[in-house]
Length: 152
Image (cartoon, rainbow, N blue to C red; front, side):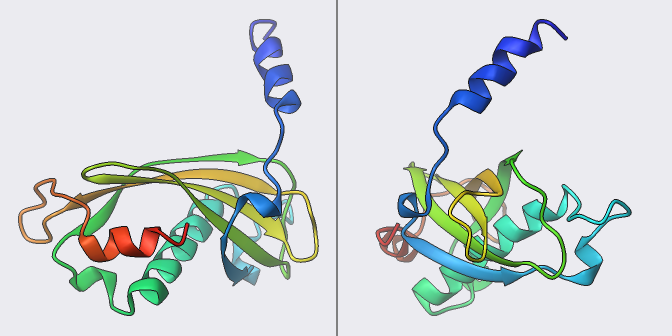
């Protein structure tokens, strides 16, 4: 436990992103079923919020069903840093930012903010790797996706 203390201190001391660090937003309401026995949103549900926000943004930005493109984004990695409890019936503002775009992958940064609050309740990282929808072989990020990501 003593070995973890410096790491925990470093994480608390790190500057947290603010709303101004995100250019694109998706609004997601919590649901009754999101709460666990302890009365707050279960930790696993945050990943659903990340996926819903990114998928919603992409569908709006390209004006098409992302499942029908020449390449599809498969989730290769996710991570979440929990900062505050959320609960039903909170309304969430999920900010999306681009951390990195590669030849075949996209790394997103996300911030979950309770409606009306300046500080984030959670921070996330989400990685899509693009693959051929039939063979699942890794391929390039489609031009339509790259164009949509310019908004981030």
